[in-house]
Length: 100
Image (tube, rainbow, N blue to C red; front, side, top):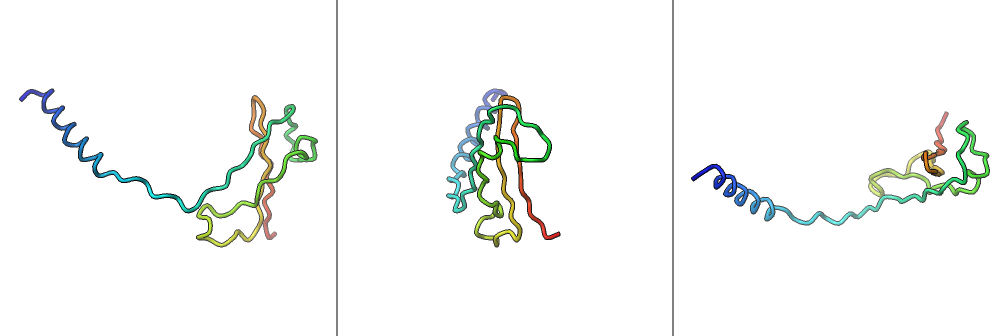
């Protein structure tokens, strides 16, 4: 038996075994949040202030939750964001509350 036949035989053996061992992925019970990213009318001034007209027109996201969803309690402090984009940049303004 030459090398080419051995390679074909190994591919058949391991290829068939790999496909029969796979099963469909279980359905996810938790669906992560989806966020809408609005287009900015013009480039934004990056200064840490979100009083510009473009920011005012963008709604806040829903409050962020734990990545494990309902398996974990709601975060103690609020975190949310506003998201804009233009042809060059992705702009994210976030509000992160903390106890101090």
